[in-house]
Length: 317
Image (cartoon, rainbow, N blue to C red; front, side, top):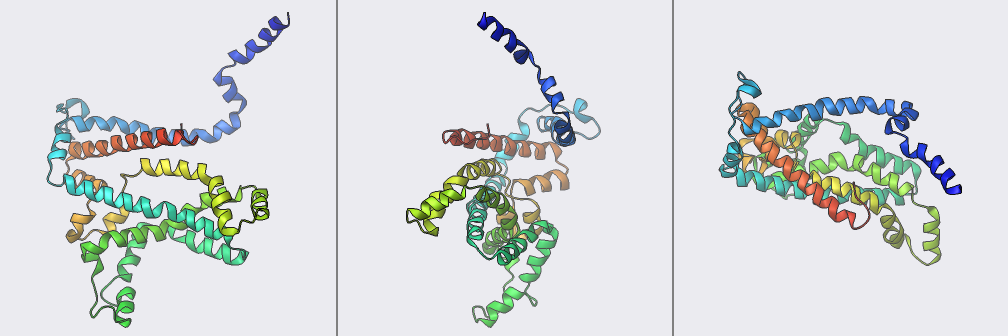
């Protein structure tokens, strides 16, 4: 009898629809609707344009009138003389940004967490956050002025230290471009990227530090034994996202800092190649095929990184 009563009581819970649960949280769900509409309009509807990569697309004939050509544009890209240069630059710049740009905010957050002076800590945080809110147009102009051969601060400093005899045009030397790009991107984003890690560190139980201190662990050991293991799930999640975004070597920063044609052999990545071929040369189908190729590889890398991270118990899905 008790089992029958229990089953009857559980039937309404089992049959409770998703719509009823959403209706119960209508005020919270209402806040999400604008974001869903925005993503649907600007992310899902444009996916229809992927069909262009399998056509010889014509603006006058449209999607329905343009002839289908299969994988013709993909084969053209794989056989293009620029293919290996573009792929090399994309992978090298992406790996450099990942290798330098990913751990740097974590290190900054760990160091700021050890600062005891509140005023000094807040000042450093504010100074490191500010560059994120500057557009790449402003930042690139600042870098160009800094490295200029005419009264550029860097050249003046190097000459005053007698390290060089005459000014160097850094933005015309391919050997300097990757270093300039990585350092500039790091300066711009390190402070803002550290916010998440600072928030994760703030959530660590203080009793863990007290227990480690009683066991004789100094501040340096507490970082490795308490802080890093506690924020590891956050680090893994952001690492998965960074790996999935690995082929996005950059667009605005490379386009602005690497605008000199002399630098094309070291600055031309997939995004700038798509822009130059697709927008400037009006080869829409070809550029769409190149962009789709990059997207497929990125999804594969994201899925693979998530699969590996799942073994540690921290994954996106």
